[in-house]
Image 1 (cartoon, rainbow, N blue to C red):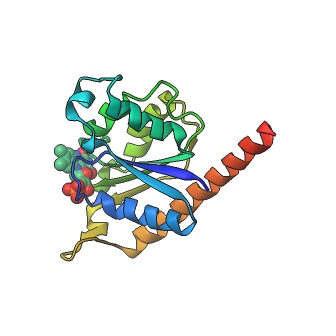
Image 2: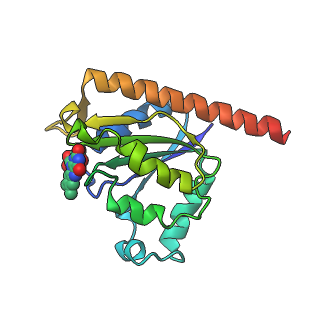
Length: 186
Ligand SMILES: Cc1cc2nc3c(=O)[nH]c(=O)nc-3n(C[C@H](O)[C@H](O)[C@H](O)COP(=O)(O)O)c2cc1C
């Protein structure tokens, strides 16, 4: 079964972004995928800020990315881009760190004004890391994700439909890509 790492670039552990990543996780689990999380803000801050390539925590995180078939890159929009926290980690991936991975972007912003952040800010960085299979992502706005008092998140109907389409497209692309690698290799 494919294995996916969900990389979250939110500085907050209770971000509405979790509503999006939680939905993707649930869908992929139903398909039998192996899922793990990499919350960048949980990595040692000094290693990120001082770009310590030789830090054990960074080496371990990079190994998990290397072993994955697919990656979800999730971020809130900060200042018309993805977060600086996320960039500190992407800077520490090897130059070809996303080669051969299928990548799904999941973003959330306060307004629709920065809808193109995935295309204009994230995709050039993914390309620099040799990602060649970036599937259609989802950009949500805060008003589409309600934080529930009891914990958890409620997503509006339109967002659920878009997420479902995006996650299934991502899953299909990953399966196709895995099968093509197997048949080329055999
Ligand atoms: C420092 C900072 C900068 C932000 N910049 C933008 C922005 O440029 N465009 C936008 O649409 N939302 C922006 N936002 C709003 C967040 O993207 C949005 O609220 C996101 O869902 C974070 O939600 P959370 O507080 O639940 O983590 C910004 C928020 C913060 C804290």
